[in-house]
Length: 370
Ligand code: ATP
Image 1: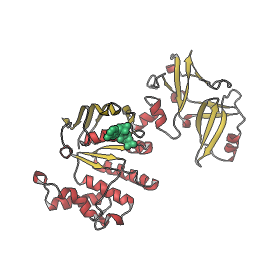
Image 2: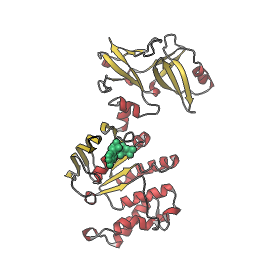
Image 3: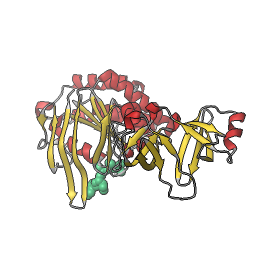
Image 4: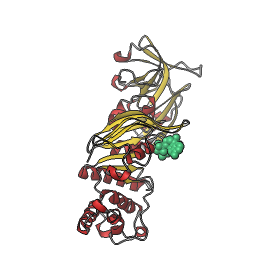
């Protein structure tokens, strides 16, 4: 197990393609860190630089305090699991698991006894013991993915890297494997860096998440800190389904007024809590749908119901006021509630607790730690 450091790391493929911009993160020994962000944000490139599969343009990457910029992949003590886990089709599970160890030569050569013991430990850990004689074609997708993970684990890596390892599995299996991966991590405690574009995977697996966009880190924190206190509007809208409501407008004398591009409606306004009241000028107001209480039939309410989605345990209500669109989670399903929600003519007010209100400046960055 080891700690991992990225310090001012850049990756420039050419002047038009800068994949990673000034990445600085320190991953602690035994930590599970997830790199998450939309397609093309630089997650895979960051992982590949750490693995030694991609050269670094600038900056340093270290493992346990040793700069590894110029070390070959083999010398970095890393195990990798990819999305496409290409097992050897003609080898059974036991041979697939042991292949890498059997290929180690010279000083790294292992005795057969040691190889057998590592393979049987990994098989036990991953629930593969009864499948050791099977060929990959006779395994389920989840079992194959576990073999791929086992191949990395038998090398007893200092750091385990995973790049979208669950994306070939169907939704149900993905949920199961997520729980298994977390359990495995708690058992082994190997420092793990995991790449995904799936925010649910990131939220549920990580001790800390690195949220990236267009090559730049947006926030590095625990998942819940990022969810409740996003550093900017990108993070606020990336995490959460439905995402945080973000209303553009401006503040003056402690009151937020939504920009009403439509012109016709009376704009939505909100008196801001004291820790935000001194802000003046253009800004974005943020509040989560689940923290948005609706006051249906409120004479002063500025919103009208635009539609709703009934999910069984809750209903997502979409509201608008001119160009200002927000959503709220309604926790009282049932015929009476739905009748009220369906009434699209009545005025609807919203109420948000002071502690749930977030404010972002004109650049989209959190004000006062939001
Ligand atoms: P995805 O989720 O789609 O895999 P990602 O976040 O992992 O995306 P990267 O694969 O790291 O993103 O790519 C980051 C950026 O670098 C992208 O704009 C991509 O087009 C660019 N890029 C990646 N590899 C190369 C390359 N070999 N040459 C030029 N540009 C590249």
